[in-house]
Structures are given as structure tokens and as C-alpha cells.
Amino acid sequence: MILGLLPGTEQLRQFELGGDPAAGYVYVFALSVVQLTTGFLTIGLVRPWGERLVGRRVPLAPVLLVATLGGLAVTWLFTIAMTTQVLAGHRPDAGLVSGIPLAIMVACYVPILAWGPLELVATAGYWMRRAAYRGADQGIGSADRA
Image (cartoon, rainbow, N blue to C red; front, top):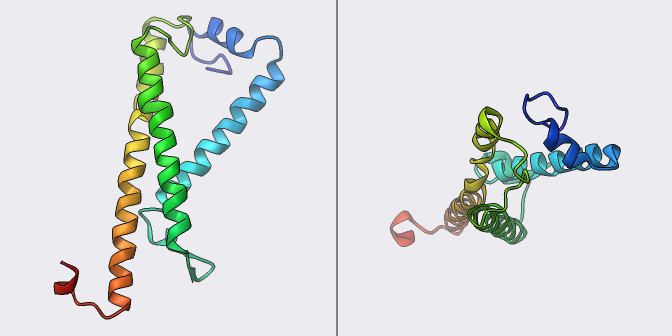
């Protein structure tokens, strides 16, 4: 949309870029880098490579702290605040997009509503998996963990 490739989004593009198109493009690019980086780190919560860095086990507490705060922040920003704003009639596109382009935009953005809650679920799974490893390392049997 920012490049004007989606028909019906020209007004939104002009509105978003405002008086300084270069700043708008830099902002969108930077936002994309942040989103991809945090998404990649979220995947690390459910993949084995998220438990080791350069052959060493990643400390549990910092991962849990950052992942929990990140999950809460994303839940607040997208699942709660954005939904509340849309229900109150404040659209992110300022009402400039309609029809099929609006349907495409909504379809692209709806999954972001689940990102925060799913990150919190992944964080809980990471904690439980790491706690199980810690119990196994200390010689605790499966009956003792139940």
C-alpha cells in the first residue's frame, strides 16, 4: 500500500506519506525490521535454537522477562487498544480505503490480533519445557514432576 501498488489506496498513501515521503518510507522500513526481528525471536521460543546461543544454554530469566513483557505489550497494542479504537470508530486508514482494498487490508491485519496472546502461550510453553529440562538435570523423576 505504501508503494501505491494496491488499487484504491492512493489517498491512504498520500495521507500516510504527508509532507515528507522519505521519512514515511524510512519509518515503514524500520517498522518492518522491528516486526520481523521480534517475530523471529518469538519463533525462538518454540524451536530448539532458541535455547542455545553459540553452543551455550540461554539463561531462562531474561528470556522469560523479555518475552512476557513483549507479549503483554503486543497484546495491549494490537489486541486491546487497536480493537477498542476500531470499535469506537477510529480506523487506522482514516476512512480512506473502501471496498476490495479494505477487505484485503483487513485480511492482512486480522492475524496481528492473535500475536500477543500466542506469544504469551509460547512463553509459557518455553518456561514449562525449560523447567522440565532443569528437573531432569537435577535427577528428578517424571513422577516427582507431576
